[in-house]
Amino acid sequence: MRLSALVLPVLIATVSAASGERRLVEGIVVRVNDRILTTADIRQRANERAAQTGKPVPLDQYPEFIQDAADELCMLERAEELKLEVSSDELNGAIQELRDQNHVKDDAAFEAALHDMGMTLDGLRARIHDNLLVNRLLRREVGDLPITESELRQRFEREKDQFTIGERVHLEHIVFSVGAEKGDDDSKLAAARRLVAAARSGGDFKALVQAEVDAGHGTGGDLGTVLTADMRGEVRDVVAKLKAGEISDPFTSPAGVHIVRLLERIPPTVKPFNDVEEELRQRELSDRYRSHLSSVVTELKKRYVLEVHPELMTASK
Image 1 (cartoon, rainbow, N blue to C red):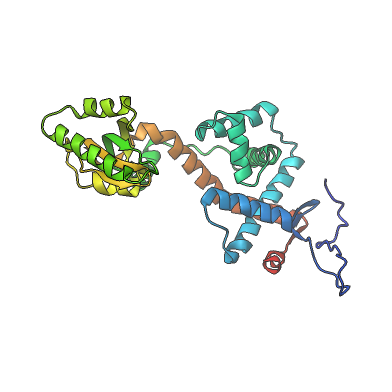
Image 2: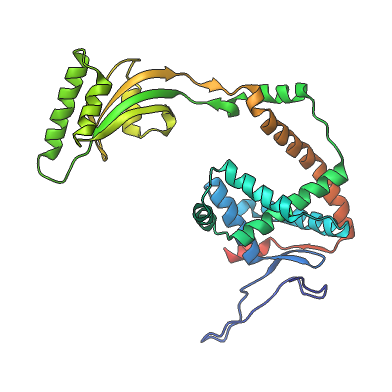
């Protein structure tokens, strides 16, 4: 709901208490004409940022965080003036692209992911709608920003580290699960040692593993190619000492008794330029729009009624 221009910059609510004191429970942190963001809105945005980055917004970054929100409201106000719109098809397509990028095919899993971020589907739709509208405004105000392949290749060279795939290994393995019975861990460790001895004496490791799996003694097989960084610490430490073709000694983890065979070690590689060209283009566009953003917003702020109260967030911490 949009408020009238007569709304005060700070909303005060009262709470009955034994002391009879009145206290601030909600405040308008940002106002651009009739558009507002309250302390609750800013907290929600901060929670979303924390869910995306894995760490909370530091207190000393709130002024900049809030100023970014004010800039966004200025652009949304300008978009409304120009009667810019986002169609339902565009919005639905953007949400589907987000799901595809995160490999979320199931509606329940998507809603669970949103819940973890403290968001609802309606909230996500509103945020994506505003993002699309701001991008449309920037394209209109800034115009086309042609980018050459040469410029993208220069950026690729500067940012190669960001497109590097870490070391990968191709493994075969078996895990003997350990039960609660006394001595079960010793018996599984003994079985693992027998398998290693047989394989190192010329036996077929893959066949020996399959025989144990078929007998119900454990789980295993070809793990395929996996990133070293994604492996459990105890597995990674053992694999680090193996050469291609070598079989590890049995080792334990909370999952049970392990044996791994290293088939291949693939050193870190850089993704080909063609595979990341579109991502590079979007990054470059984003940076160029951002560089123009300041001048666009500065002009809008001269025309709009603007109030920013970052101290309300500091006071609410």
